[in-house]
Length: 143
Image (cartoon, rainbow, N blue to C red; front, side, top):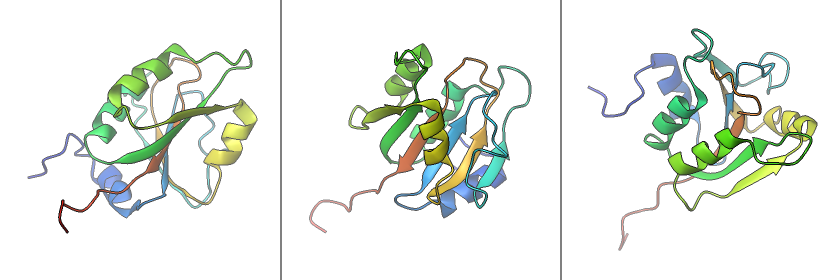
C-alpha cells in the first residue's frame, strides 16, 4: 500500500514522472487550464464540485509527497498577496521561496516547457494559482 496522502493513480504517475526542475501548476477553478498551460503537460482534473478539491488540500498533500525548491503565485493588479497564498506558505517548508508575477506573466510561466503537470482544483478563491518547481531529495549524510 502507498504511504502517501495521494492515492489518485493518474496524479501519482504524473508526480513520479516530474523530476528535478519540473513545474507543477495547481490551478484555481477560474484558471483556463486547457489554453494557458504547456500543451505537453498532463492535466489532472480534481475539480469535482465548486470548492472541492481545494487548493490548500492539494498543496498539503503535495508537500507530504515531493520536495519543492520554489513557488510562484499570480498577484492581482494591486500587487497585494492574496490571502490564500499565506495559507500555501504555511503548508510548504519555510525554506521554499515564494515569488509573484502578474497575471499574463504567470500564464507565460505556466505555459513553459518545464510545466509537466497541471492540477485543476475546485478552489473558488481568486488568485489561488500556484506554480511549484520540484526540488531534489539530498543524499543521506556521508554519502
